[in-house]
Image (tube, rainbow, N blue to C red):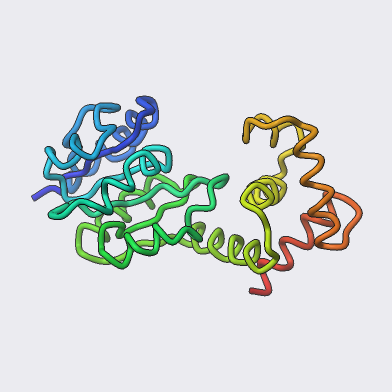
Length: 207
């Protein structure tokens, strides 16, 4: 019997793209129309085995998920590179309760997505190597006493974003980005972005 997969997102294009990625797999069937599942009540009505949820939808409904009894679907959370989800106590609690059974990087391939769905449906936990790298990255940020926004900016610097791109991505002023960058330079005792990127990479590899 095919695995019943629900896609939870307010972004219709995201839902349609995911549906396309799995439509050729006879072991997976989508049980909802793209963009239609945006609330916990919608999801529970589907009785799906696995629910793929993006971080925006997750933040909208996680308090309801924590309070809900009899929630059967196993969630795979799409981990955003700009949202430090993995160091959040809520995520840990939901994993321990068995509600979140997988964390998938937003940069993962379609093949990894299908494999994650099958692993989670079989009752196992899925965390891909890209997500593990992000966990280590975020652990380094915590040890360095980074603020949330410094963590986001440092992660985008590692991805090669310039100040203007970071400002656009995080919806903040470019001057704010520059101010955070200067504080990061002082914390890591470097004089520029290139040295900071090297320090962050070295720190990640040494963890």
